[in-house]
Length: 207
Image (cartoon, rainbow, N blue to C red; front, side, top):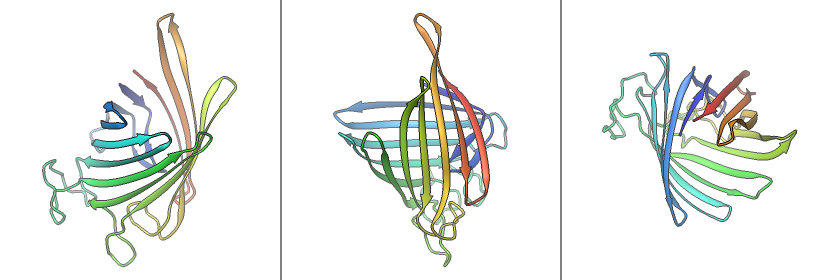
């Protein structure tokens, strides 16, 4: 499928304006392999291509994601097949995830373990991490999700000098019936970043 969004906001960070975000995945016996991308309509927007390998059973899930951007964290034009840790054209970032969905609440932990990660206060690899707690609920005939996310320690990847809440968000979605056989999924999300004092509102639709 493809999402069209008015802005690209990820974990409390503004990563671009109006964007197309295609995705595809396959699954077999709990294992999944997916691809996700983001392309902004502005030439200055960073382009992104991710590959996700995951496994889930019951409410438990683990995954590894390879994030790739067409520009490195240092502003260098990236090349996809460059992986070396000290290669200035490498923008791959590898992240591990572990989580559990309890039903009323889902908790996930993410840690960057290789690639173009940020650094801590001493200039060492930060193993930048992020924890999120999300609670879905239904109200007024709409599907809502309240979420809070934080970084547990210092990393310039998230612009944090220590523990910091960087994402407080409320999202809503609803399928709008167009015909008897076709509905258009619409969604909106308001996000506040207490660390940066930023606020964002994104709307989108899925095809």
